[in-house]
Amino acid sequence: MSMLLSRPLAERIRPETLDHYLGQQHLVGPGGVLRKMISSEQMSSFILWGPPGVGKTTLAKIIARQLNRHFHTLSAVNSGVKEVREVIAQAEKQKLFYAPSPILFIDEIHRFSKSQQDSLLAAVEMGTVVLIGATTENPSFEIISPLLSRCQVYVLKPLEDEQLDELLEHAVRADTALAQREICFSEKEALLKFSGGDARKLLNILELVINAQPEGPVTITNELVLAELQENPTMYDKDGEQHYDIASALIKSIRGSDPDAAVYWLARMLEGGEDVKFIARRLVISASEDIGLANPNALLLATSCFQAVSQVGMPESRIILSETAIYLATSAKSNAAYLAIDQAQALVRKTGNLPVPLHLRNAPTRLMKELGYKKEYRYPHDYPGNFVEQQYLPDGIKDQRIYHPQGAPAEVTIMERLKYWWQKRYR
Image 1 (cartoon, rainbow, N blue to C red):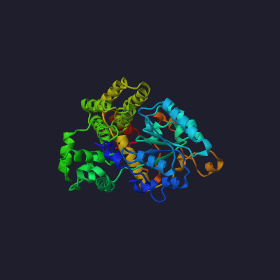
Image 2: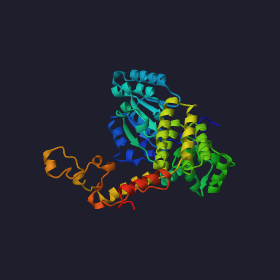
Image 3: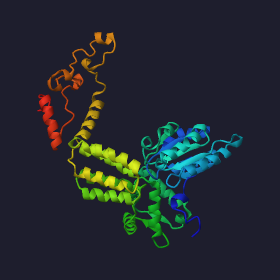
Image 4: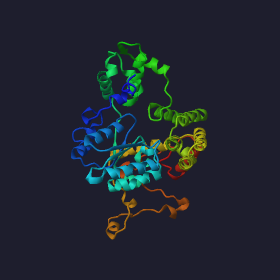
């Protein structure tokens, strides 16, 4: 096999210009912010945030190529502060004689520790490098504030089926090896389904299916794709479709009160090398969404879990995660808080900006007091039991019920308290 064909299909047909780049027209199409940036040759540091296989690395390489800039790349998985400083030292040398700043591309930048991110600050601030970071995680949670404040964040969207369809047709025409096989598509649904909007995964599946067939023409069908995927079961891919499928299975097992299944899916994620903070964040969300006021301690434990795994790391974090997953799975369940905020937001969108009742408004000035602000407001702590009935919602929705306690013992108690206080509203 030639050196060319030993490379994955996704690498062999990687586009080299924006005109051949697939998707993300809001960024690279006519009038797109990145296209304008390239045209003006005025580059600033930015973070590309999006799911796997949507073209983050490709876009960074295209930008460097079209601007004819030195391109340094680091992977946060296997690079440390030492490697960052070495690249910055090289960049300082390359900036002699007023050459434009080289580009430093960091893949999976969310995996960089605080100290590693700190080591980038001066170089980004001084313009020694133009930083392009790629992440599948929310930068607000994973990138330190000083670095994030020096970078724009651009969101990349999952590829649509039409774009993936176009990519398939392009691949069998443009790739030398595939063009020799006379490939035609009788059906594409399975290819598109199992790619999950990930262009790289789509091309990997296509290449797997084609390479498994005898020499000569190949007709792609759903049955053929399914057969080959069953013969070649993929391991947990923390950057691909199973990343989200198994995370979903974990949360649904907790919601379904099955601790055995919850720990099993947790183990699948850990064995696949999943980031423990990613898992812990999902447990925090589950504690609020699925348990809520049926057991408020669940959120406290999940939050403590996130803090603990952030400080401890593996392998000990697996024990902390296991304890939390089992606790959540065996806890009483209620999604009343989740339903309440959904209903409240829908109500706000429907009714608009209803005025705040005068007696609830603050009155820091004499004029406001004269206009009736805060007038007739009754301070609950001045009344027996620290409660007095008065209107808190706007006039147009003053009798609206939003929070509906459910049947868990803790929420039954809450409902009894609300009935005692608000006898008319909670009947």
